[in-house]
Length: 319
Image 1 (cartoon, rainbow, N blue to C red):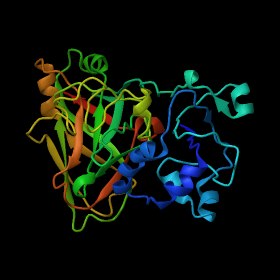
Image 2: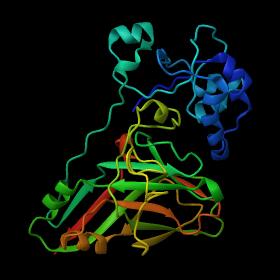
Image 3: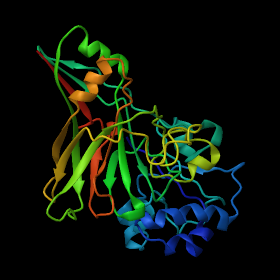
């Protein structure tokens, strides 16, 4: 999806934003910019950037970190209003496109519809109905509209991926057939090459419902109530008591080993026992994918359903 991202205060940028780096550690600093700038959210105007404002253009001016952290604009312009905000949106009408503006009341983020089940004679493939990832270094950031899902470990900046499937589709797919196996399949888009000799990544069954949300690399949106999805702290905007990075089973469902050459490839987890539990009456809230040793380095990005290509799948086979 072609999300446009917005930043609207050149003064604060030059004084504060330019000092940040493109690491997860710096993400928490982005939140403090709100306080430093003394931003008042009411009455702000949002600007949608044209396609000409690319990361390479900003890179020529040493501003590449803006796009990498979700803050993309040309700081040389003097036409931006005061205030800071990031917006993801799609489907602007011709008038909005012409003026490059949109009012706050018209804010929207378009969610991708759930793909249909693919049936064969002895199998069915379901596609994720929701997916996101949660960030320990940005505990209020929702990533429900991100095109990549990130598994990462490195001390206090761990990232965990959440994937869920529609229970109604699951019931339809199984019907009165006898389940033989169930595999959760995810596509690794890229790999940072820091997995040493290989490290374990686990999948565990989630034990609480969660809301996908519409955020995408946008830690500020929670402050104005436009994001209501899962974060590190909360499963949705109202459920924060027992979440803390995810509420999941202590027992690992399955484990795979990730090495530096796992990139541009599918990996799969055997989740048969979790689907069997669903057939016995246990609700299925999806899974959390995380590193076994979250204190070790290593990051992979996984294709999210927003890409509409290589999205997470649940493959069921029957006897």
